Image (cartoon, rainbow, N blue to C red):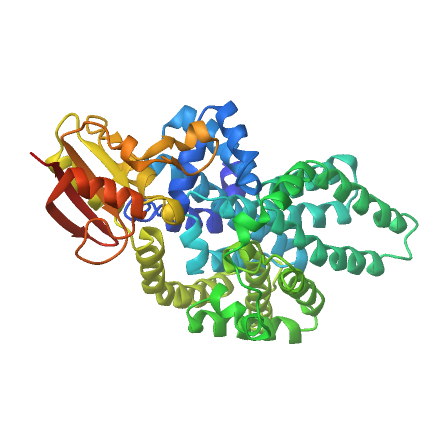
Length: 498
């Protein structure tokens, strides 16, 4: 009974449960969008095929793809199964955020509020429902922050090793997350300065760099391959301006009500004498990585994107949680032992941005998860009119990034498998995310009596968006008999001329 009581009093339990509920809420409703389709396409290949692909593209996400491959091999590749690791990872992020805030401020109320606040951020709940690495990275960085505070409080090989492991996971899953080390350096210096008169305090100054070197070692191959692929992976990102830096936190903490709420809590934490030091450290953990990535993005490649820096949100939640802990202290309740009034105040204040953020969360999931392309709708059109022996041509080449072919394949029933045409090598054999188009379109038409053509450009022509040689080959041998529009896609049925 005492174990259950202690569990229920744990500062991490209720934030973790809240985040898990938010992450699982309607998680199967939004369709997979193109980035999620990319994750599915990579993770469902054999390991040798996957590593062959990573040598050419997407090495920065390679560790996540391997983890997802192992997960799918056990639990399958349904939408729920593929999205569940992100929900579990973000649940862990909420728990570690609460634990880190508890240790940073010495306040259970601050820890409880910080973990709960993380669950109110729409961008956090969105990526708790996406088949991408950002939730895993956010969890790893939050865990590293807590483990670092533990190691600084009572150094030991085991504690430093766990910290290094957490940072290694973060770096291997997304290299940009290593910018969190910039904020952690100041955290280490602050902790060292507070104890620099102690005989063993100086050991921290070499324990931390050694742990960082151990953490960086597994990320070196990822960095080497990632640098070779940077032009292809990041070429679409423009160099960020100072204005984009100024408005960056609005994208992390939308809607504005939530941003203002976090800001007000931060001010309270920074002004409260007992919480000022912890609040300043949380502020550095949140802000310095963003500044470092913005500065690094002024070079040949840009890395400045809100989802790439999602791992800074736990630090922002810690800062705001410190404000609620300070508020509870000002109300006359000891911050070290939350009473009903303090906890009730925290929960009430947390509920306000949570309720305000839900409409935006739904809007984000609708717009971004679909990617403006209804793969399931297109698959339904094909399945309804499919005949054995049908062929299919999907937009590729310069528009291969849309992942139309794999998106349709994910949603098509196993019994509906049109023959892919206009392809020399599929993505798996090409060791790439995209198919290699046929060099001579006329030779790749085949003798199929009917062809489904799926493109993403608007207009009345079924060929709009296809390469000119493919258009000419199809027009020569086929006539369109059906054109149907679904959101973001045009699905056309072509029948061979008599």
